[in-house]
Length: 311
Figure 1 (cartoon, rainbow, N blue to C red):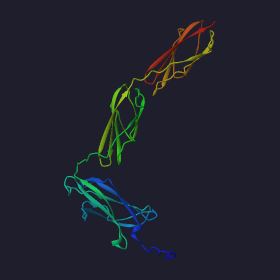
Figure 2: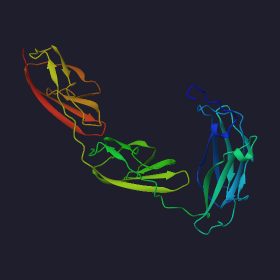
Figure 3: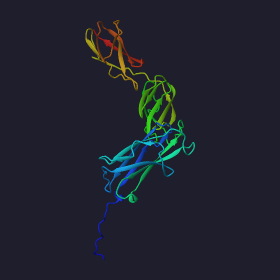
């Protein structure tokens, strides 16, 4: 007996088929128009798609076949990916089971050669009275703020990727200063210092929503820093000098847009967007040169250096 080989399997058998049914959304209003997409996926024992498989689709309530709503097709065939779809449309009226709604089963059965050996698959759709919105117990909005303590006019990143919940289709933001935005990630800059309540509202595919809020404290922005050097360091009358303001720095989230030079020798001040500027002194004396830098928010800073111009 130990040397005998077991006989080979004889088939075909329905047990080599893996059929899954998914519905989206799984809650519909009894308005005669709301629809749910039913997706059927068929695979064989090797997890490969089963092509051209014919399936019958029907609706049941409390296990009894009944036409409660409508299907776009009664018979569907899988494509090259082993997938077939059908659309269910909810009826109009009151639920059969009271205000809590009616559960309609979508039953999918492969059509083969032996009905008794056929394995059915099913999924449920809840039908509720039109206008009823269920509590968003499955939605848990959350977001992070970077940086957590921003300055005025500084760009802040808001990230809602830590939100929990399925089939979320919309992320809406209000920033407490009149600004609004949408999306999982968004940026915003607060123009003035103060405390703002930022609110995130998420909405799922069936219209349920949930909100969360955080208070963001925005501190006053810092002024830029002015700094410069000059060459040559021991100038003479009539010698062209170069003044370099590249050591000046803007505050976080800003940029320097202008450099204003006052020479202290009675000549006109010069305002430029370049960090380098040239000037020639026409007489021998001690002069105080002042640099004023201005950022794109109008904030300024200044610095002065004294230099001796030789004959």
